[in-house]
Image 1 (cartoon, rainbow, N blue to C red):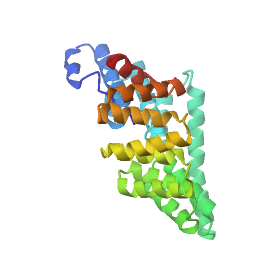
Image 2: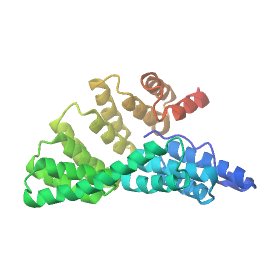
Image 3: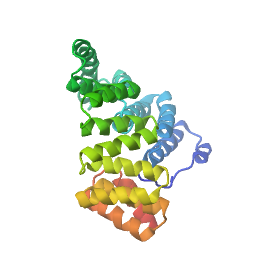
Image 4: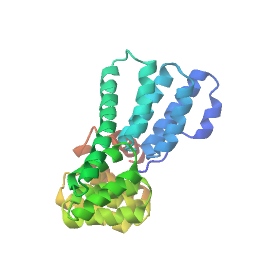
Length: 276
């Protein structure tokens, strides 16, 4: 996850007096936090906008749903916000698409019950443990998902995807040592597992183990030179960790070349524009 210096400070809010201006100020602050990967802080600002109601409030509710769904991996909370959005904007242009998401989430809840029943009859089914874990993970029930993944792995230790997903769940719970072990297990089973290298590198970066992070990102690029996310990660390590402007520019430029419409493209362009 790249780290960018926040362009908007919380103390600036006191300078905005009108409700409309204050909402815009909070929106900018939320966008800045989101760009930093500080999603909980972004959500706190969006909640304040949502509480004020109106079109801006509805947009804030939808954005909170998107953050939970896309970045926090918590489908259950995402659906709660999507439902709230539909209550205020039932005829919006994206209402049908969001209604479809909500229906799919409700169906997944039913599937959880079905898999539990199947496992009660046949507890040795790897696929049922794994599929149950995936559904629980999507709902943000990481501890329950961990239990299901571990059961699947106990039966089939060579399941690289299960190890990776288990690592992801540990990662979401900030259990970094456990996450590292599972990402490494996934790589041991599948040496070309790009996402496992990338996620492992991200943990090392968070711990400021920059040498290890660089090694993992570089390994991913060796496997796939067009793996944009690894260039993004290297750019962040060099920019904010090691303060090596030249190398940061190189890798951020590669990221934009490979993924010009990527989720972090606007922040990368802003960094390049401000630092060159």
